[in-house]
Amino acid sequence: MGGGVDLNNDLFDRRGHIKNSSIEKLKNGNLKKTEINILSEHIESCEECAQKLSNSFEQKDFLKVPCGFEEEIEYKINRNHKKNKQLFFYSLKVSAAACMALVLVFSSALNFMADTGVRKLEIKSPQFTAVNSMNVKLENFTNNIIDREVFNNGIQKK
Image 1 (cartoon, rainbow, N blue to C red):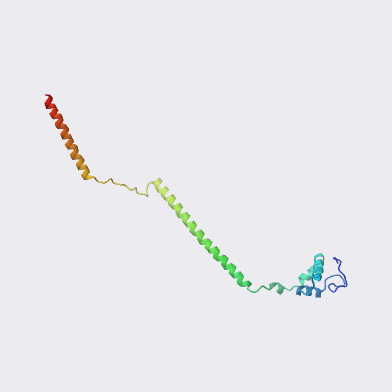
Image 2 (image 1 turned 180 degrees about the vertical axis):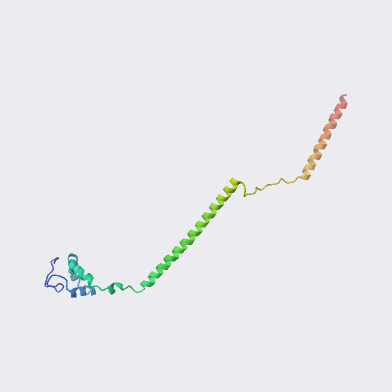
């Protein structure tokens, strides 16, 4: 036995190991601080007493859960599930937008290379019929004036 324990103490048997009654008092919290310290030091150094303490607990003692534990777990699971669902739909939207952008980029590039899909918009020049007819008439008039001048100058020189 270690820790300088008095063998006449109520906590230990004659072989120097913790009594069963002392273990029950320790589990129930019916010991003084000094007695708890003495038992703790002894349990650290004595494997037989540590095993005796661990075997003193029944399995049902470990199965007790605090009040509201189940509801708290269900709430946390549902909350995590909801967050995962939101993340999934957000990722789905982003992926769809990226795919659409890629389709648009590559479809216009392929159409340009193949020269098949996109019709070119042809812009027709406006019809200036009135302006054209005036230009033709002015040109004819100018030509007539020039021809007369040439003809008149030719007659005067002769």
